[in-house]
Structure formats: C-alpha cells, structure tokens
Image (cartoon, rainbow, N blue to C red):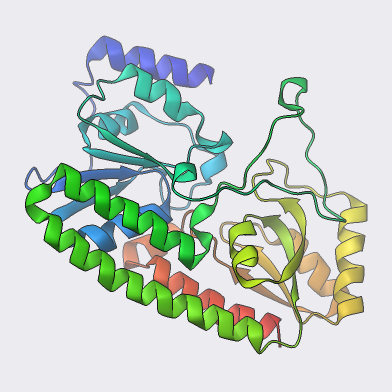
Length: 313
C-alpha cells in the first residue's frame, strides 16, 4: 500500500506526462480497461472491432500480488469504461479512482453484477492466518466469472454500459452479446451434461480453490488445500494427508491445480495416490505465450470441460 501512495503521488505531481502505453490508443474505438483476463475477453467478445480492450494485470502475473504502476493509472485515466473485481485482491482501485477525474468514466464492479458467495473453509483446508482487523469480516469468492451463467450476466452488463457510452454502436454491442450468450449457454449445457453423466460428484484441488461459483452452478462437491483468495501457498502436513486420504478413499482419478501454480501440492498428492495431475483454468489470468496466441475464456473453459469429464469418470 505504501508503494501505491508513492505511485499516486508521482502521478499527481508529473501529470502523467512521462507515462506512455506500449499499445497506441485508437481514439476511434471505445477504450475499456479491465483488471483480469476473463473480463478482458468478455469486452473483446461484446465490443468486437468497436472496442479497444486493455488488461491491466500483465499476462502471467498473479492478481492477488499485483500492484499498479504509473502507466497503469494512466490507462485507467484514459479509458471510458473500467472493470474491476471489487474485493480484497484489488483494494488499490479505491485509491486510484479517488485520485483521478472519473466524471466521464463508467466503472463496473464485478461483485455488483452477480450474487456474491462467501468463502468457506472446507474440511482439511489450511486456514489462512488473518490480522486482528480482518477477523469477523465477510470474505467473498471474487472469481465471479467462473460459471458460464455469471459470465453471461457480466457480458450483459458490459453490453449495457458500452451501449450507454457509445450509443451509435448500440445495435452492434447488443448483437455481439446475443451471439456470445448463445455460446455461453451451450457451454453451460455441456458442463451440466458432464456432471449429470459422471460417476462421482467430488473433485480434489491440490491448490487454492477459486471456483465456488462454478461448483455451485453444477451441484458437485470439492476438497482443496486453500480457499480461493488465500495468500498462503504452503499447506499444513495435515492438509496434504487429508487430501491424499480423500483421493484414495474416493478412488479419484484426477488432482487439479490452477493456472500459474507451481503444482507442488497437486504433484505430491498424485505421487502418493497414482492420480493424474490436470490443470483447471480459473481465467483470472493466462501465461504470456497463451495471451499472445489469442486464447479466450471460451477455449479455456472447453479445456476445463475435457478435464472435468476425466475427473468425474
């Protein structure tokens, strides 16, 4: 947070004159800045060639450890629509929005677009140590985009806001949204079919679990090393032992890890049980090479469908 104050002070003192974007701003397009990959891609799908979308968190970076730079603040200042999560992971947004002239900036807080669910501590999880000030506070799963149904709600909100800011292209945004919603509906049906025809209703993550919205949508259970927004990465020995016992007892064929993970916990569980290690994409960010290849939320979720089918067989 101290670094953020310094950044803000620098920005205000130099007027951002020395901060340049690597990608030139196309003034003929609606400028949309988002913090995470999922909403960056939703903006591309809904906006099409009428929108220039920018993802603030660099590809390959962990959202929970991200701190904004002066260039990032300039991107927000120069945008017309700014989309952020609105939880603990991006508390820094409040300071930035209070420091820039935002009267012409439309802001979308993702936790306001859906019904948020609280984080839960499942049996076996390593519970994160909290500061005294944090005790008793409600903590929500911030990864609201992980269910296709929520992805539709978020995309609908984007279409609404884009149409308000750029009314000349309202019909295009509405058409693009309807086409994308149809794809998300088909994806939702695919996941429902996979779960309905699975031989089990439980999965194991040797990692954080930022997928409450996803499992709630499809009605199956999970066990994991940490809740979704945990800052810790080293589980207790009892957590690893619990997950190993769970995999053995349930004869679970797959242990998941999430993207950008070191995979250590999942591999340790797999080594002890013979289970296969697979990745499940939460779509909060992607590695740089995938970003440059143009990977999408839809393509990542299709990978998840294949992985989930194998895990529930």
